[in-house]
Image (cartoon, rainbow, N blue to C red; front, side, top):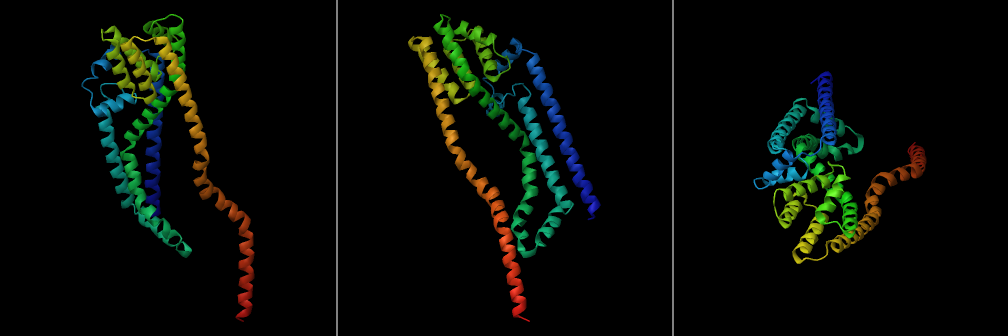
Length: 307
């Protein structure tokens, strides 16, 4: 196959990938702008709460990642199917254009057989790229879920501190939560789920049941510990202000321990890139001229010996 056709196929795939990324970024920015401008209305929240009992495991995964519309599950399934089809078409086009054979030939032509080390990677790269395209929707949802968990963990300490301060000032839990939500962005993940908890309470559910539903919707370990403590305080009748203050202090200590653990793990994580990327360059820069001079001396010596 001519190199012109190979270049055209490569340019076509690059163009398709660029257009897909541009469309996704445009839709993502539009969705974020719409979420910031439109508050969470009660009708939308009621629809989310009514579907809790009938939601599947896939639906719960998408819900906890922030995809909470009724069409989230079928949209995800359709996009996953399209991703698999695009991945299969990508693999077929790579083999049809004989790019794998071309890359294998170029690698095999490297002197000393060094390029043969990369042959397994060349053979597997089309399949890896196809699998990446096929599982791209799942990767996006997983990234959104991780970001949502991170945002909840960021907002939780200040939330507990403010709720504890309001409770110590004489506010009840519901009034303290209402006062807190008035000052918070309505589309932060934690604020959004707390608004759903308020709507659950307004619908007539007992507080303990509403808290358990809230814990199931958020599904973040630190938040689950906090909700379990509030449920226990509600059931035994202990002081809510003291419970919130203890939880705030305990969460602050856990965050400090987690930060220390991450800081201690940094040298270990730096070891592999240091050995693979940094040290070879230093060795090449330091010993390269010496090795070159040794090779020149040996070459001149051998040429003089065999004359």
